[in-house]
Structures are given as C-alpha cells and as structure tokens.
Image (cartoon, rainbow, N blue to C red; front, side, top):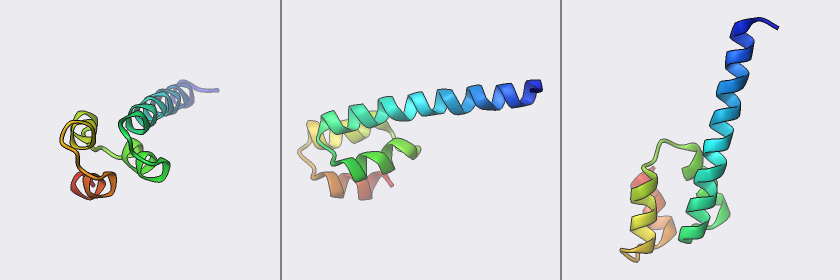
Length: 68
C-alpha cells in the first residue's frame, strides 16, 4: 500500500467519525434519523442546527430546509 492510499483511508476514517458524532448530536437535538443523516453528511453548521431546533423551537424539517 502506498502513502497516498494510507492517507486517503485515514481521511475517510476521520470523516466517518466526524459524521457519526454529528449524527449523534443532531438526533439528541430532536432531528429524526433521515434528516439527521442528511445534515450530518452536509456542511451545515452543527451549532446552528441544534440551536434552531433546541432553543428556538423550529420544526426539524423547517430547520433542515434553512440549513440545506
């Protein structure tokens, strides 16, 4: 295995860990699984996503439309 392959695998592993963590945070904030998955994989601002649903009382589907 060459160095580029190793680096690519590490990047994918790290991205997977970050997406998994984001998914967990979004679901705890009240997003249903399908929306949480879409948001976790996107570049959406996680803090804003949690704030919209958790503190501002926005419905998860409306918050997802704003964020995506």
